[in-house]
Length: 552
Ligand code: G6Q
Image (tube, rainbow, N blue to C red; front, side):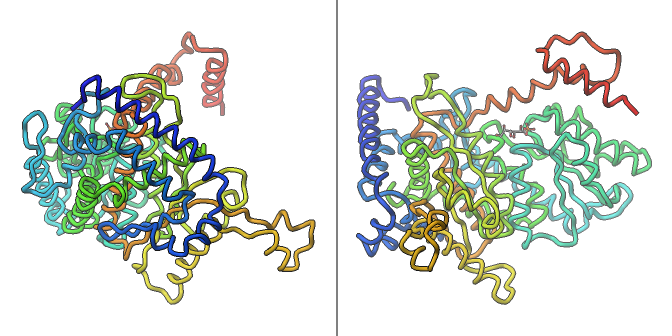
C-alpha cells in the first residue's frame, strides 16, 4: 500500500539523510583495517555472526563497525523494507511495470496457507500442480509410464532457457547425490544446434522423454529446440506422430501454444504469471528436478525455501540473514564502489550455483530507473560471478588477493561431505578458512621481511588484506539446505532492490533480446541476398557470413 504523499516526502528525506550519514561514515571506515577491528574487539568473530534456520553466517570479516550496521539497518527501515516485504507476501502487484504479483513464496507455502491474488487463494492450485507432478514423477521413475514402444523411460531432457533452464540445471547438479542413477538427465538451452546434438548422444528415442519448459511457450531458442527434438523423436519411433504424447510433456502458462505444438494439455504442468522465470525453480519448471531426486526430496527442498521465507518475513532485521546480506551488498556496491561480487562455493555439487545466481541477481537488479521511472543516482546490481573452490584459488583468486579492485566474496561451505574420502573434506574446509583469513588480514611488509625476503621482492609479496568476505556454513548439502540457500539469495536480492527502489521483477532487457534477432534471421537464411539496411558494420558481417557459409 503506497503511503500518502506527505509521508512519502518525509520518508524520502530521512532516507536521504541516512544515505548521507553512510557516505560520511564510509570515509572513516574505508581507512580502517580489519586487522585493527579484530584486534580492538576480541569477540568480533563471535559477535558478528548469525544463525538462521540452520545456516550460519559469519559476517565479521566485512569492513563494517557497529555504527555501519546501525546505519544500514536504519536505511532498511527508512526504505520501507518491512512494508515492502509484507506487500510481496500479501500478493500485492509489486512488479509494477508488468502489473503482476510476485509470489514465488506461494510455491513453497504449506497446504493450509492462504495467499490471495486478486482475492483468490492460490495455494490450493500450487498444491494441485505439485500433486500432479508427484504422480507423474512416480510413474516415470517406477517404469509404469512407458514410451511409445513399451520401453521404460531412461533419459529425461529438459528443453528451456534462462529461468526455465538455470534453476533446473543448478538443482540437478546440486542434488545429484540424491538422484536416480539409473536415469540420465540432460538439459538443452542454447539455440546453437551443438547443444541438442550433444544432449542426445548415445540415447535411444524409445527411452527418451522431453520436457519442454517455457513459461510463454514462444521463446525462439526453446521452440526451435523443441521442434528439432520432436523431429528426432518421431523419426526414431517409426515416424508415428502419436508417439509425441508418450515422449513430450510441457511446463508452461500458455495452454494454447502447448496444444498448437502438439502436446496434449493432459501432459502439461501449469504455473502462473506471478512466478517470474528466474524465481520458478520451485514451480512445475522443477519437474526435471523432481524426476531426478523424487517427490520427497523435492518437497524437502520446498520446505527449506519456506523456512527461509518465514525467517525473512518475521525475523527482526538485525537478526535477518537475507536482510543483512542484502545491506552488505549495498554497502560495497554504493559506498566502496565495488563493481562485482564473487560467490565461491566450496562444494563441487554447487558448480552451477554461481551461474544460477548471475541470472537471479543481475536480471533482477540490473536496472537504471527507480520505481517511478526516475534515473538512479547511484549504482545498482553488482556483477556476480564465481566458481567452486578450491579450483578458483588456482586462477582468479590472485586478483582478489592482490589486485587493485575490491571484490567482496561469499564463501559457502558444508561441515559434512556427501562423499567422505580420507582427508579430502578437512583439506577443502581448511582452504575456506585459510582464504578468508588471508583476504582479511593479508601479510605485512614486516612479516614478509621476517621470512628473509630480499627488499626488492617485498612489495610483490605483500598482501594488503582488508578484503571483505562472508562465510556461510551449513551442516550438509541436502535438498532442504539447498532451498534455504537459494531463498537466502532471493531475499537478499529483494532487499537490495528495495533499498534501490527499483523493480527487481521485470526484465525488459531480456524481452528486447527476444525480438532483436527476428529481423536478421531471414536475412542470413538462404535465398537471394536481401536489401540490407543496417549500419555498415552489420551489413558487412551479414554479407561475409552468407559468403563464408556457402564456400566449399
Ligand atoms: C527470467 C527471464 C528469462 C526467461 C527465459 C525463458 O526471469 O524472464 O530468463 O525465463 O527467457 O522464458 P520462457 O520460460 O517464457 O521460455
